[in-house]
Length: 192
Image (cartoon, rainbow, N blue to C red):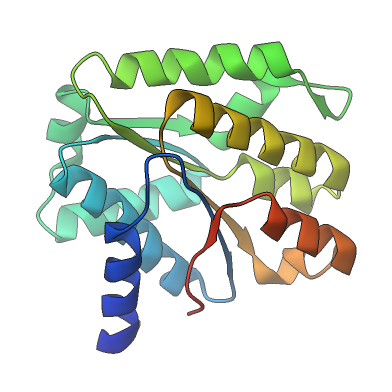
């Protein structure tokens, strides 16, 4: 668990993101990452925003458990259209072909999720873990292409997106690629 000072810094950070921010976090500690993700989601719920989560099974489960422990009913949030959760690998399978993202398929999939989220909520925020999975597979160019597609979509559709990479796999890439990943985002989450 993070210190109170770190928690306050993360809470403050999420309270001041804009509706077009594309945020990145490179994390060393799984628990600290999950704390950050929980704050991101909780802040969305506090603002009555819909929250889209595209994550691995492990992170989806851990997030749901944390939200429940903090008094947020995941089932109730999902039933009111405020919490939309998808599997990151299944989503990638919908638009990745021969190791490269098909832009039209990506837009179709994400726009479907945004439309579903906006049926009952005017504002939306999203977390996506697909880029981290591509990075783990050493598909660095495809990762960067997907990051840029996300940035364009965030700006066009006006929603904040949070991406996260585990530091252990992130460090395996070329330092020039690291800079490009950071440059593809509008903000970097405070270090933990």
